[in-house]
Length: 187
Image 1 (cartoon, rainbow, N blue to C red):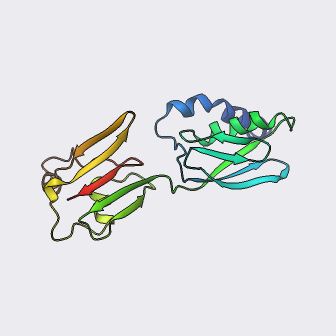
Image 2 (image 1 turned 120 degrees about the horizontal axis):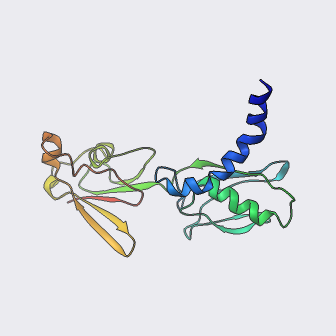
Image 3 (image 1 turned 45 degrees about the vertical axis):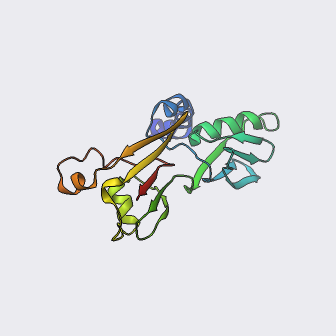
């Protein structure tokens, strides 16, 4: 029993801190985006607790740490960065970062759907599901012309969506999973 308590109290935080390199390699770990909200706190420092929004330039500002670039980083990576900056002022800062809002994780549906606009992606969402969440096609929609515009490094990629193949079950390959920043266009 004492060994279990020792592990939980002393070794688990060490294991979690050494997992920083693993977090960067795993694509399924959430990475912060512009517009996301995070609660940052420093253990035993009540005045160092703030909820902040990731700014359009990908940064946040935190007392004593100043401006910190966080877009594209996981919460353990942000904890590490802030702790490094706080070491000038605190001997052993223990920083916790908790995501409180994922408003930066959005896709957009535009064109001839019932309710065009932004869609917060809180889990895996396919094109068909996003169109459904937007209220479906309106009666003048060109279902065959539906596309996903995906922003990539150095430009954009146009991904055609074959709606008839998807709903018939013949070919589901164009019912892609959406990523943050994707725009579904329904002409």
